[in-house]
Image 1: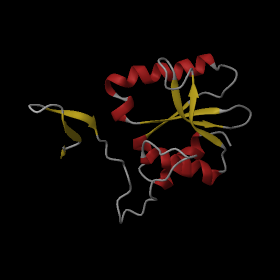
Image 2: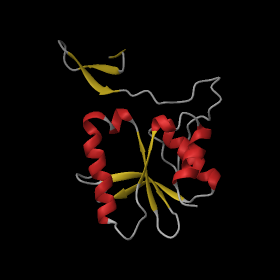
Image 3: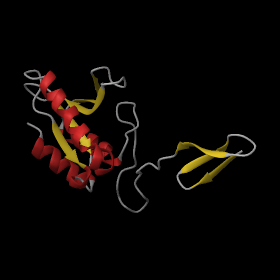
Length: 154
């Protein structure tokens, strides 16, 4: 028996207790009438946010080649990470991070900064400096194009 309440799915753990099974995160899909494109996979992977999708559209529109969810230091293993976009800029690639206050601000801000600094340090001389784009900077797909064009080398 599964009951839904808020953002949690409750499952019957025993005959006496109910416990949260997993948090259900609503996807940031475009609402009808907003005029924004519907979220679609990026290189076969569903994006974690509408901002990531909009950045992929901007990169495509501007003619950049990139690898989505590029894994460094082992990817999902402890100490590893996935870089949102590994943009194949000339003469060296550029790591591009899409940040949000929810996942990269507050108490997580230092951890995010350290991850970016580690990539910059470990790949020194092999990449251009990593770039952060915050969700508040790209409220629309058109702004994503403007920001990408301004931040990435052409």
